[in-house]
Image 1 (cartoon, rainbow, N blue to C red):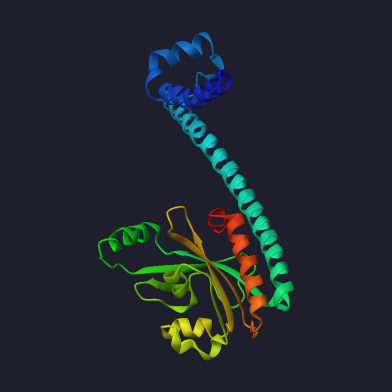
Image 2 (spheres, rainbow, N blue to C red; image 1 turned 90 degrees about the vertical axis):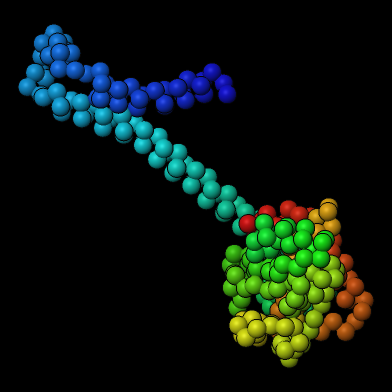
Length: 262
């Protein structure tokens, strides 16, 4: 902290304290009489109680005003941060979607990119630790969308990934590798979904899940690419190239992609 910042901080703290002290203790009847006789004769008809209340209110105001200003400035800063983050996410999405579109020959408006993260980070890591001693605690991942690109599936969809596996997300978590599925509309009963999950996912026909793995070899998130339109990757070469694009994207972004969705 520089001297300039220290002085500002000292004034910010001392001013309200000074006025509160004047209002509560320092200004006595004798002092007030002396003031308005010798220094402030025009205020001789003002009762000391009003003066003390006024000084106390000024002290309170000087306490609240800087806090209010700091709160407003902090909100403005946060709003700008969120706005910048959303622009960056949209930009990254467009780059990835354009690359994928060229490989599977589908309109990019039909593709959705989402991310699944642990529902509770603390319980997730506790479950990971306990699994090493064969104690099983259920782990669920919850969906986060890119703002403005959620399609028919809203934030908050939960899927179990351990010990029970639900959907491609559960398979991806269990295998720690990219998984792919098509004609999903006809396979809802094959993925251990409950009725609510079936209803939410009933329109999704194509999906790819890519695990995001940290240096400790733990999955911290799962990136998904899905579409409500039928997409079938019959060509193994195209499938391999698509997987390479998605895997390269994950490798280049690393764990930072998780923070973009926070």
